[in-house]
Length: 252
Length: 95
Image 1 (cartoon, rainbow over the protein chains, first blue to last red):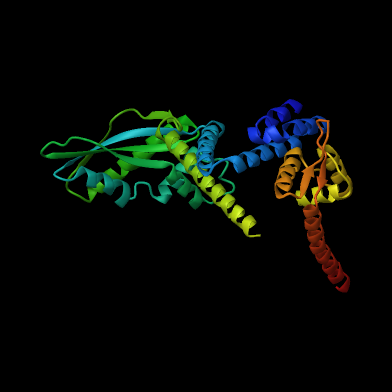
Image 2 (spheres, one colour):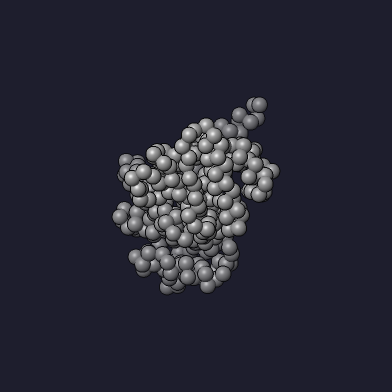
């Protein structure tokens, strides 16, 4: 503990240490080291550093701190996995993109009842099931479902569209099973929809489902961007408050 | 009263002291243990305001003394606190 306190004392700004360093080290030798003392010292260092930093240094420093904090959180938070299934829609004489949209949105492939039954079947979100209502759980599940349009080529008579259905969950096997179930829901809606229309939309799953870890890929970039944005805003706030405090002290 | 500046000025009003002696004195008269970061943050601020100043010492432990400006500030702040205390206690007794 004493070593930690001595190390923290070295982190004060050099100009401050030139003036107070010797007597401060003497105080640390006299005072009984404690966890509370370490925390107090840490805040003291931060406060003193911030008072000597220029606005630009404060904003840049806090932005970097934001990125580092978000990177640390990424590893501390439980891992999340994303299962992906790619589906090709072929529609004779019709727009495949319209067909895909019709199946997923207009025909309500992912309606509340279907999603609620998947939550029950697969026992999803065990920690939240006791404290959250079914509606809230369904909303949570919807936030874990992502649908992306994929680029495809079309022939003269048959229009094709492809999309990817992605489901994020903490267990990779469950994520895969649920993603396959979601594709199953789209297939069921296609069969039901075929009864009420003359043309036939052919749906095929392009590849076996792929599962990747949540923070491998663009999400970690988004996470880092979010951290730097929060740090940047905190930097602006701190410099604004420092200026306001200086102005108030000057007036008084 | 938990403002470190007022606690330090009150401690120095009783005589010159170095950092650790202030820490012990404040704990005795106010029951508050100031951490080293808080104590020296306040000492830095008070010295910059001219309310305390270091007194000559050959030791590593640097004693400080309260200045005239520091005494005036402390008197004014304590008078305000005293007023609040008297009004508060008076109202409590009238209830």
